[in-house]
Image (cartoon, helix red, strand yellow):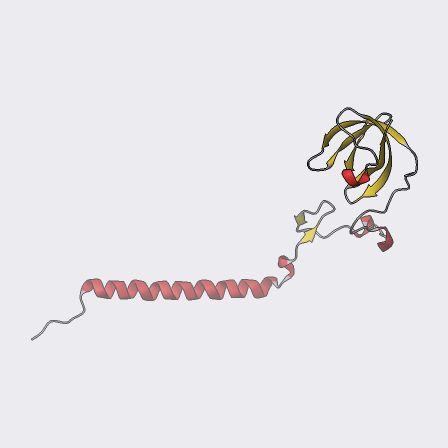
Length: 148
């Protein structure tokens, strides 16, 4: 007579595998039942005034009315600046090979970008100049630059 092909170890492995499958199925059913109990209310997240997520809903008494026309999404509105006024300043840096530099205003001590196309006279570092301002893509640029 031949012995059975199933050994004790094989039986134990099969029992462990079946027990693991049963436990997994029970956990799945428990999660499903718990989810049905709670519903979807616990999944809702709110955002506070600082942009941080929170579980508590906002207080309706603190709600502010915002006018949609006050919201700026792109470039801010242009400021009213007198661009025809002649400013006086000194060339802080000018690279003749690349054709750009910076002029420091004598009154406000603010630096303005200058391009060679905006120059009437040839300028170099340290020259005293007078110029007008024009709004560019990244701020004000010096144009109509002349030596004093």
